[in-house]
Length: 91
View 1 (cartoon, rainbow, N blue to C red):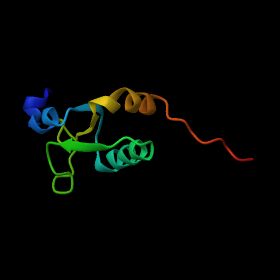
View 2 (view 1 turned 90 degrees about the horizontal axis):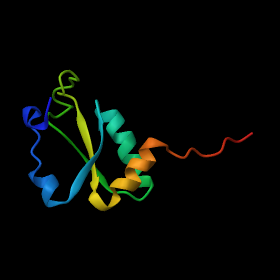
View 3 (view 1 turned 90 degrees about the vertical axis):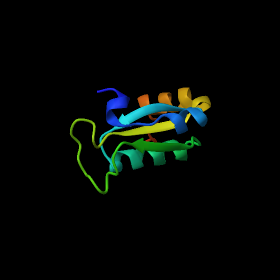
């Protein structure tokens, strides 16, 4: 389903030069990714078509959340999400 049908309004995204780096299906996963990116110095926001706390649905795009980062940070964020560096295991 395309963004128009989901009800996303990209006006704010365009004005701030934000770019979608990832999509998830719930607020908990979005919070983890947001915290991970911010701990690596990348500011981000997430956007969804429905308030997840009001309508906790995940069917047909209803619970989908888009993780948005500044265009300048997009490549770094994408690389971090593709292969996050894990801390070394302690013996």
